[in-house]
Image 1 (tube, protein in one colour):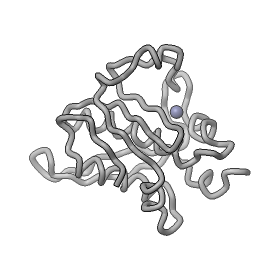
Image 2 (spheres, helix red, strand yellow):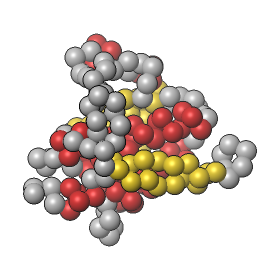
Image 3 (cartoon, protein in one colour):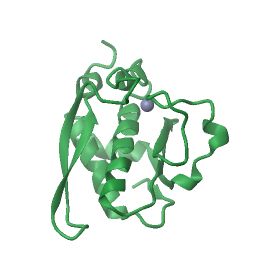
Length: 165
Ligand SMILES: [Zn+2]
């Protein structure tokens, strides 16, 4: 499975399960996870890999310049580069998850007219707040006891089915 971890502290099984979970909920057609993971390479990198020279002209959806303090990502050429907090706690997991779902949304609409707009039209430019989203719960007992962690996913389910409408 082409999910490659350059991080030191993240639990690879948990993040792999998270990615599969997001894929499962975002694409409601049968049997789409394996073909996706066969086609795409997902690089999980620590924030310290963030190349600020490369990113300095790119703005996030909330209009801020990308920094090496908050998670970010780049999707294209069947590769997703995710720059993540390399910290294993629930708060950082939630921040990382939010970026992971965002880039997966782009990837699912890759090579369609909705590659960028299908995702960003569902986020408020000013605050980054999601206008159209749905919530899933990720179960884990990694931190002391069983918890269900809410993850708010940009709702591109219809766009995936009808990318040319
Ligand atoms: Zn985006």
